[in-house]
Length: 94
Image 1 (cartoon, rainbow, N blue to C red):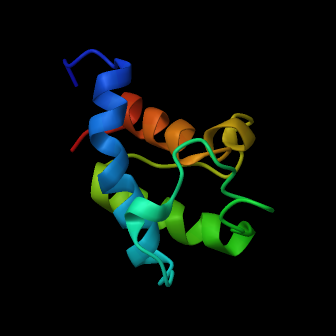
Image 2 (image 1 turned 45 degrees about the vertical axis):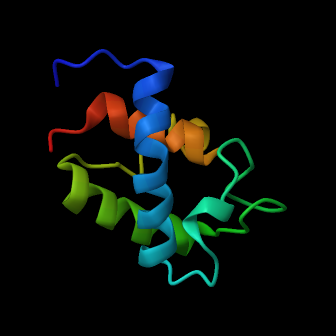
């Protein structure tokens, strides 16, 4: 991807990734209700490890790269919608 990964690029991609999370996990909320910097786990969105596996699968199909379970950065990547979106923006091939 030749486009520089700026905060504006990440902000533009946030709604798409939020919608992907809502649809992939059948969440009963609007994508716009997901706070970009709120935790995805625990008190935030309340996701669990099974949810992460499902998300990794749909992200790989949608954006053309693999999220590996042995990646030591996964904790950081899945911290928030913004972190996940930034990672997608840097790695996507589609």
